[in-house]
Structures are given as C-alpha cells and as structure tokens.
Length: 432
Image (cartoon, rainbow, N blue to C red; front, side):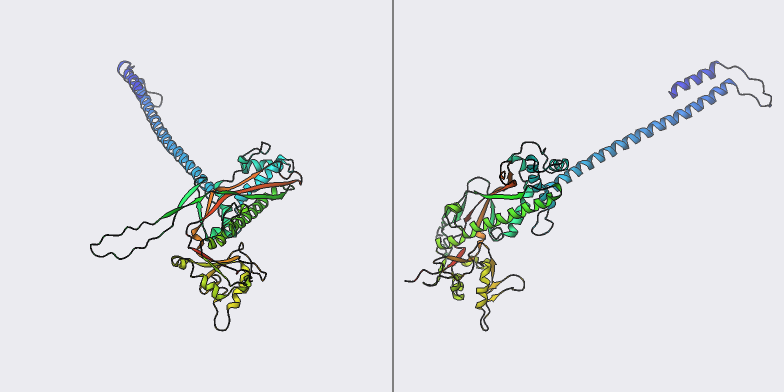
C-alpha cells in the first residue's frame, strides 16, 4: 500500500506542475500543488508506518495469546491429573477407628440408593446425593456391580480390620492372584558342615512341600433402619464400615488362631490346632483340666518347642482374661510378669504378651485336652486374601422388617509356612 501511494506522489510531482500560486492576503506564499501532494504523501506514509507497527503488535500479541492459551491448557491437564491422583490415593481416616468422610459417604450412598429404590426414602435432595456419590441414577435398576467398593475405599475398611483384629497385625497378609495358589514350604533342612581340604563337597538337597491356598467366601449382612435421610448419610456410612470391619476382624482372628478344621471353618486349622498337629504342644499333667491350672514352669517349657530361629521375634498369645493368672506368678522377689513394660505392653520373662480375643478365656471350669495359649512367631502363618471387600445390596432383603440390608463379603484362607514357628499349651487329660 505504501508503494502505491509513492507512485501517485511521484507522478503528481513529475507531470502536473501547476506553477506558483499568487501570495495570499497575509503576504505568505501559498504552497504549490506539488508541495501539497508531497506533504500529503508524507502524512500517508507516516500513518502507514503506524499501521505496520499495529500489525506487528497484533502479531506479537497473538503469539503471546497462543502461548498463554497453551500454558492454561497444560495447567488444566496437570490439575486434572492431580485430581485423579487424589481420588485414587487412599484417604486417611479422620481418627483411629473411623474411615474417611469420602468412604463413609460412599457406603452411606449404598443404603440411601436402596432406600430410594424401595420408596423408604423420598426427596429430590437424596436422589441428587446418590447420583453425586455413586454416579448412578437412584431410580435405575440396582445390582451388585453398581456398588462395588473402590480399591482405595476397600483399603480403608481393611485398615479398620487390622486395627480391630490380631491376624492382620501379627500374621502375614498375602494377596492371592488366582483362585488357587500353591506356595513352597521347606520340609527338610540339611545343615552345612566342615569340608576337608581337597575333599568332595557333599550335596545338600533340602526338600520342599506345597501349601495350597484356596480362598473361601466369608461375610454377613449389616442391618440398618429404613428411616434415614440425606443428613445422616455419613453417620450411616461410618456405622457400616466400623461394624463390618469389626465382624471381619473377628472372623479372620477366629480362623487364623482358633480354626478347628471342621466344616463350619471350611476345614481350616488355626494355630491352636496346628501346634498339636505339628508336635509343638505342651500338655499339663493328667487331671489338670482347667486353664487356671497353668504354671509358670509349663509356660517356660513351651518356649523350648519352637525353632530357635524365631525366638527373637516370638511372643506369648493369650486371651486378655489371663492377666489375672499371670500376675499371680509375681511372688516374693520374683516378678516375671510385667503389666506395662514401660508402656510397650505386657511381658512375661521379657517376652511380649499379645492379647487375642479369639483365644479361649481364662476359666476354672474343666476343659479336657484343650489348647488355650501359644508361643512363637505367627508371621509364618499366612492370611491369603483374594480381591477386596465387597458391599452388595438387594431390594428383596429386609422386606419383612422394613430394614435396609447391606451384604459384606471377603474371600480369604490361611496357611502355615513353617511348622516349627509356633507352639501351644493345653490342659491335661481326665484322671482315672
């Protein structure tokens, strides 16, 4: 455009000279047409320069705008990734014995959705909460798949199970990757020895055997009142989480420590039973058929039965009610029982005592040939778990009582990986 105006100015100056105009009334000479055209051309060029500057500025601003837009898009991607990471990470419970608010809302949402489906709960607010929490329409058909507890929420419930129970605290939790898993267990352990100079090195061939883990399904129903509203959803969720966690902990401890090998326990043997099966059992004298007949000498004798390799990590395992029995061993200057051990827990002869609710309580009643206590390292006893805790519900359950029932299921089994890691003590046989 500037080039075109330059040509016009050139033509005007070179071919259309109109002469000098007479001075005006003020005495100053009037500008010629050529001068006027040149002045006009200069003004046009100046303005065109400004237009070019504006175009350059616009181009630079566009480049900056594109850069800023790209930066904003990248920040949005990072914020979305951070949000997903936050949602996928296990959230810590507000305090011990509770799950997070998010987990409680999810569990409470299960009950609320069922209540809406059956007409026990009404209101647009409740329907909106269910959609927001569970990501489903409250009036849609409900099925087990709708209420699968996500992995990080399941981890929170299992943390509660570990707080309530002893099996997860002292045993080894082993995730099972298949419906049936076989793990090798050392059967024979040939010892190394001296080898003479230039002598042949004897071959040591330790034998192994297989321990089969086939998880069984365990669980039950949690009953909650039908008269719930949106304001109580977190409290209902906490109740479901805590109640189911306590029950699962009791169930795991029962099988882990006191499984009797019968059909009720899916033929699984706990440590009390396995101590006798593996020949690691101290029995009181004949006629000593009460738990109250236990002596300090018998407890010390039990410590000699497990492998010496586990003594450094061993402990006693008894029901809490045996505290009254152990404190009676402190006579005169001999005080083998320490109730606090500097706030680290009770000890006997310096070995920790772990109180386990699923073990038999102290009693003066006769109980012939019954194992009631353990000593050793239960970390060699595996708690094999398959998948995560499941929460399901149904529109038919609790129809007669107008209650909402939430089903809690877990799949697990047990297996002892070292037969000489634990020993037991039992009452004696009947006399005569």
